Amino acid sequence: MRSAAPDRPDRKDPPMTSASATTTKAPAAPAAPAPTTAGTGTTAHDAGLLLLRIVLGLTMAAHGTQKLFGWFGGGGISGTGRFFTASGYPAGDAMAALAGLTETLGGLGLAAGLLTPLAGAAVVGTMINAIAVHGAGAFFAPKGIEYELLLTVGAAALALTGPGRYAVDRLLPLPALRTPRQAHGALAVALGVVIGAALLLVRN
Image (cartoon, rainbow, N blue to C red; front, side):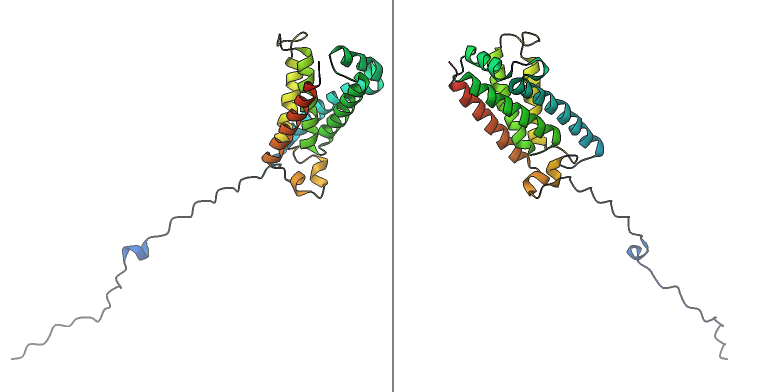
């Protein structure tokens, strides 16, 4: 006798899935923030540069008006000219006018953030001569050079970093000033050093 085949219900086996198909993809790592270009930064960074520029720049401009106009107890052209002559510079009145203009215009440029690398270079060149005249025999004030050195380094630092966003340079149609480069600031500082050293060469 032929035995009947056992009844088997019709069923479909579940499809085989590979491990790679069921594995969920790990979330992509967040992209690193793009580096900021020179001349840009946070609000606090720009506010700090603005504060430094205003204090240093107006301090220098005030010294310049002392030489040019005799303001703030200064000696004016004639009194400052006599000082330059006594310090060994030729043409004391001309040197007084040159120093006064450099300090006034350079200081106002730093305060406003206008042509900042050149303004910083002007202050650096002037203060190199101030340090030389004052002498490096001591560091601390009133006989030392700490005050002159702070002004020199501050001006050089602003020339290198740029003025920040709160500056007139940001409004000028000159890419080199709107987005300053460290190389431009370094060249400006070097120019100030060379001019300041050249003036020292004519001093007796």
